[in-house]
Length: 366
Image (spheres, rainbow, N blue to C red):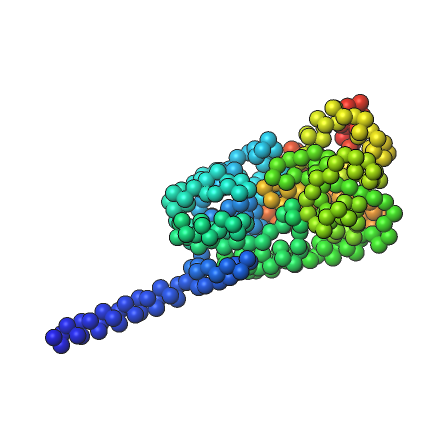
């Protein structure tokens, strides 16, 4: 009987220390949506969904990624060449051999069976609506991060995302350097931007869950905000993506129009069908239309937002930006964010930072 009691005591002691050891391997955190999630203290295997992979790339943590969505492996997405999301160009050779964990895309639920096969320690998501069910169905912790998107761009929130993910992925120093980078660009743009605005501007063909034409726009478009520029669209919505009708655009009749090249082909086709509408716009008559690189491509390209801001500044405030070559600056910014010089690939496939003329039913780049 005594031997049995001793044995039971030893077993209890053993299980106590095992459970204590297991407890020490995990921690309970709150993600950026206030959800309490139990995660491993050391995260080595990661899957990022809903477009969150770009944040893993920004943090230089691709070595932890064990599976990706099918859309992250393809050279085309909704008819657009994938170099329109520069992070893809930086990792395309790496992701081609990684297992697929579902189709991917906004609102698309991953394949649970495929997720379980790659055994991630953590899933990083952008859509809170699916996070709890995904965690319940897989038993894998899911954290949801806040991100730049078509609903707006909160700079401080985006910096906190870098810091939050940096802590989870062991990339805190990289996260801090990204925050410093953002602060540096913002400070420079604000210093160079306008205090007195004597012109009106408009941005069109903004992508939102796919490419759109000239009436797809954005209130408080981040590059404009960085430069202190207000637009007529800002009075229609507090912030974020919206569509306006052509009659309203004619009434606005902006002095300058910027076209996002993600929707350039749609603008081109529409111009062929409705030349009189386009040719009635002051900016088109005065040849003050310019192209930008895609702001959004499976969520927002943070690096492109800043690159576009420098080009817009060069167009609108040439004296204050006379020392800036927008192409050189874009190359620098994109490399600083994605860790690789992929600018030539973006430039080759998207005719950004050009003057755009509308003549005889055709678009002519200058």
